[in-house]
Image (tube, rainbow, N blue to C red; front, side, top):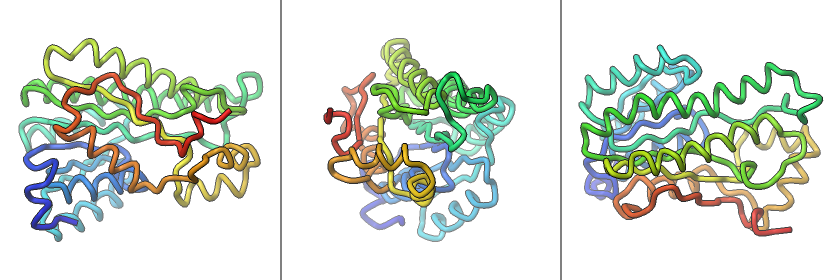
Length: 259
């Protein structure tokens, strides 16, 4: 929630847009960004749910804009960014959080092709097209911070997750390319690479899929809560990380360090 301290917080005066903001990491990040003083545009395919969150944050004193958005549809993305421009005139922070694996993912031989394209459309194309529309608004701000949600799956092989791995590998490569391409304009691009994150969705995966249970057991410090991921996002959104770009921050409880 917005606090008196938050009005002069680490993100005071910044305009931020978060995709996938209705639940999980996105919701936790929206709450934390607002508490740190940012004006927050909340984008999600679930329009009513994201509107409820925006209303709640406004009651706490935050400046919020609810944006129904389907990241797989460029027309939907363009319309949302046009509303953002009309409301705030610029953009300082983009957090590409929409996406995620599904129980339908498989190895490259067994997967249904539509599941592969689902992962690519949501995770990779969604990130690409949001950056495409965010960067012109960051130019108006004189720079900005792009925070892309990667995954340790882009750096370690995962059994039965070939679509998700391919999509997040693309997100990681794109993020580094953006870091090089737009550094001269003061636009930074960094990646948060979680392993599994504690959530209702992940609890369901753990119950239903032995592969997930095995993967979770390798998180030496256990699973982070969405709020812990949000804390990392605040750092990357803030001026504290002003000289970081093209970086990958693993938030995986030590899994990437383990054999």
